[in-house]
Length: 112
Image (tube, rainbow, N blue to C red; front, side, top):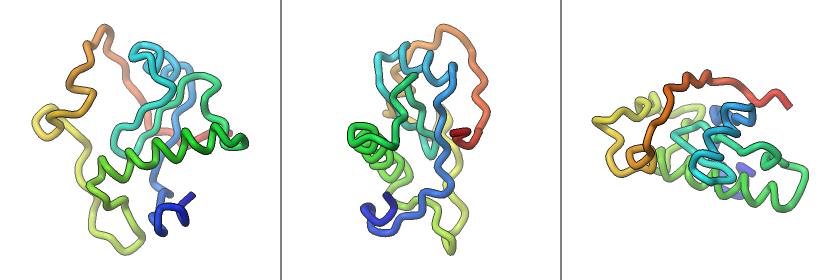
């Protein structure tokens, strides 16, 4: 996938496909969404072995690149930008979501 994006290093991208990720996607009626370098998949949608799954992953990785202003952390890059906050995250979809319940999401690597 990195080659298709011109050699961008996606090693810092974290895939979330647990029950919390599923609930978050259901709440916004999405198959997947990306925030910064975290990609959250709805239950059953993370399927890198299928063409449709690869297309969805590629779509979300496009958002990773966009949200990191085209510069995903590379091995020789400077420090990555800070995580989004209400002060520096204006205009992203998370600003428009209505929070019904506080959820803590841990950064975990894909367990599959």
